[in-house]
Image 1 (cartoon, rainbow, N blue to C red):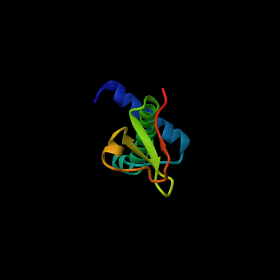
Image 2 (cartoon, rainbow, N blue to C red; image 1 turned 90 degrees about the vertical axis):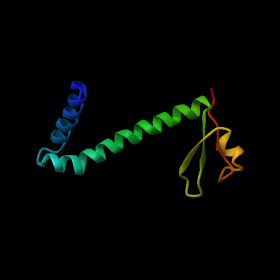
Image 3 (cartoon, rainbow, N blue to C red; image 1 turned 90 degrees about the horizontal axis):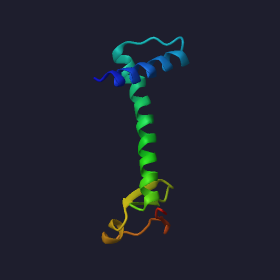
Length: 95
């Protein structure tokens, strides 16, 4: 593991302990219980930002399912597959 990766993990652990001063856990516990959740949240934010960028540049479109969840697709792919926006509202990126 590169030094900068170790420092990033160390900073996250430090922040966790500073935010939860009574916390105590093993390597396995930290990894299993809160590191994965923390990593998921960071990765989810990164993926959402990347999708916003792709929509803005017009590469990817977004439609919403009946329950309101955003579904992303490659522009041109949905029409080629015979698909239509689930709620009739497809959003394309604008440049």
